[in-house]
Length: 423
Image: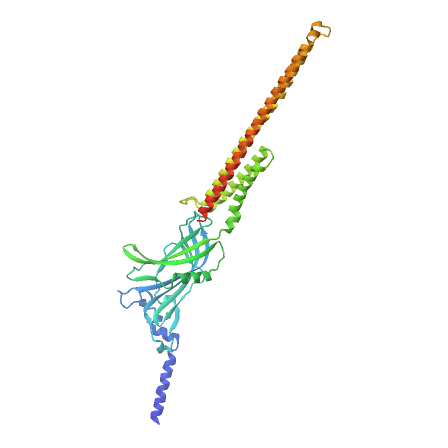
């Protein structure tokens, strides 16, 4: 009987002990995390200092907030999830009621000092995650949502139909590759698909892919591990096509249509100058959008400048036509002035005393001379009209030839530009 009670008492004590280990507090006490231990918080979590710590990292792009072409920078919001091994945070789940994981404050354990090399400005995008997750196998998980503004060298040759590729390089600021190694946890397709699903903004840019690669650099005499994430994004060009490319193209079409206008040359000249001024305003807007340090001229700049030049040449041709037409009008207005002065001289020569016999005898001669003078002036007038018509004919021929050359040049230019813009 006493033996039975003794066994019951021992079993009860065992149950109380097991239940006492079912709390997070006992686990933290067992790991020594509540003692502010320097070994756990500040030193690399390895039993042998020759061993390295491997940090596995995933980077998810959740939004692209701004792409600054002038400053050559990109602002993104990223989720940085990483995990690493810790030799000092292992336990047997059976000793703690099957507890295989728990969350503790970040400052209670060692965390890797990883930075983004291209970062110009990095901030916590939302409230900072102050906790890390511990697993019984000695693995620590952490995640942060960061707002990163990083430098990105952009190729704007195909703007606004361009695709940009920017890199985010993850590396340690203190530890060499012998002490800390950085490796990707997931593959590129998983990161791309997950980022596209989590993409929060529907703005100007579309996420195409995320690729990663490992690299080592020599930093102040030490080799440092790098994990390079290459983010490929594509611009949505609809806004630029509607607000910029189509208006310039319409100006070019209007300039071609002005050749069929039957109004005066001066009205055409005013219309073409108005088109030229409108394109000048759009060129000023383009100057504010594109960087002045571009290595090559963007195609949209060539597009605007060449159309501006074509319309400028068209304006010069219209000015030349106006000069030819004015020469023709001047030639036509000379003949009436000569005819009026000649007739007045003839009339004066026939005036005299009415009773003069010699004047009566010479009257037929004067009439014949007057008829001859009138015929000469008629011939001269016809010559002046022919000369005026010849100036007008030359102007029309020049206008027709220029229109054919102009239309051919515009067509070839648009074909070559389309091939270059959409290879």
